[in-house]
Image (cartoon, rainbow over all chains, first blue to last red):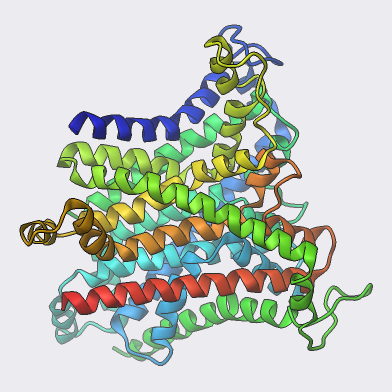
Length: 254
Length: 283
């Protein structure tokens, strides 16, 4: 029974990782046209970093990811704090909506924002993409921080209030330090969400501001290419690092 | 203390305002657009009719809708039966090892799904790994044409969405109090009966949320069917995208998007019902 379980778990991991491992391996294969192994090369990586329009798209992705992670961490933390600390009309509606937004398929979010931007006649590009990614990420940060707030002792806040702290001081000197690991974890989650998003970006950015996943999308549709393998390997590496960091921050609370 | 009320009010107004502008208004606009019609001058011509929903029900469109639902249903089923035992194994693993094993699920969960879909092409290609292995083993003589089939789309969706099923199931199974199971066994339930009558109901919220996280993207992830299915398997997501970007029939696309939203709401109601039921029984 025990070996059966180990074998089963092993097969699932094999299924999850074999395609990724093969892709990373082929990013070092020197043969251009066939899948046959012709020796190790770093050519595709050199080509990748020499491709200026691709690097431009990567830079765009990075800028959007950092900005949207930062904005949504701030917004999400304030939203979580408002929901946790104060009773106000529509509070329940907002809590439910955050959950619904987290569950919404990307295509529904993408379409609805596209319609919003068109209704406001905003040109699609940097700003619309940034707003879209912030919208995507805020619920994740808010829920993460809210979960953290739920766990802590309300007496601490009362003590601060009794000692004369205003609402802002309570937030700045009591709540924020306590939830900070959750905020950081939320930042990294938002960063990965933004870097990985294809569908929402597809609808909310224009030709003036191309991001990496959309670039990969148009390359992938043209078939297998060793440069794409290399590019994907780099993307995987970025994800692994971001996930590890966010896990570390989440663990720090214990 | 002077700014007391100001900070509080600013945060609350900001929260409500942000939600209104980026969550409520856009969805209301899509909802309204689904009742409008289109013309050559305007994407959206104001009006009110159920015309677009009627068009969704005509033969070709209904076929796309139903085949997309069927495909995603199959993907969800495969993910559920694969992930449930796996999550159970994970939940029973001892502590330090379990953290590592969990991290190995979280990494694909966060890896770009387009990158993972693309990785699948290298497996299924006519010169890909699967064909190479099968041919060198002598199982087949000529490469199998696996790419650009509905089967490839199903496999690709299972591959990208499996972690989204594993994690909620794991969370539910980890919380499961094993004493319930022991009690059921002591009272004479067979393992099979204990599983269906005790474990499954107790993990129902995890099952429903996992199914939701697989089923809904399984309808919408148009790039998986683009990359692995060619033009042959069309998801509702491909259809919606085409209405907005190629055919430019926004009201019809909006109607399809509203349909998808309704499906989501139904699944959410199911989730809340199962979670509420569990809460009541525990209390």
